[in-house]
Length: 237
Image 1 (cartoon, rainbow, N blue to C red):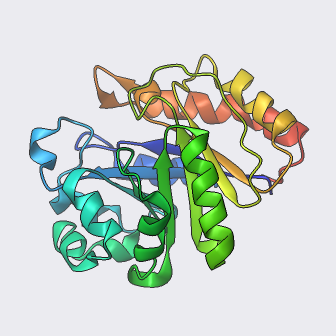
Image 2: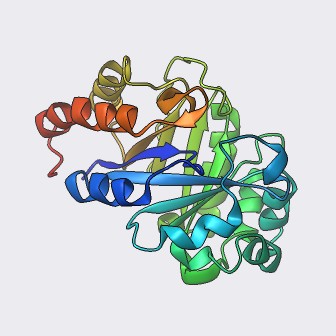
């Protein structure tokens, strides 16, 4: 399967958990992302109250997107602090994204972040291919291709529609930047036609919100739009 995930980031206090489960049962390719930071309560609707993380039990594919100082701590391998932040909820997540776009030591961050609870996948967010190339060279030196992946997001989570620049990477790579229900068909088709190596996923945050609340109607619209494209290009869903 070339397309591994369609990720929807920023589930919030208004999100119906039972509806999330129903969506995943219908569309197993869907992954839901939780944004967290030490100052989650100051950062708006997109950051889920950590006390609600346990309500996500039963969601099959979850990613934790760690921001701010919490991301820097995770990059140093300080997972005890992150575990405390999530009230011991790390085991609910399959993938862990470190939003450390301003750091210059991304590859080393990935290496230090490997000993996470449960051995989940570590995603490093980067905004340009220069860092991606550095990450790729360092990863080749260390190995462990299966535990590292990379998200190219030129918009940095702001939902700005950015051109997709394909990076020739043998591992798994994600693409984000202004993806929404209106343009996802064109962007996904472009990726299927131009990604020649490895696996990829797409991630959207601002594009599936209404009045800054997570909008499950938009999530379903994206998934319905993607199904014929996925079938056309060979994924089994």
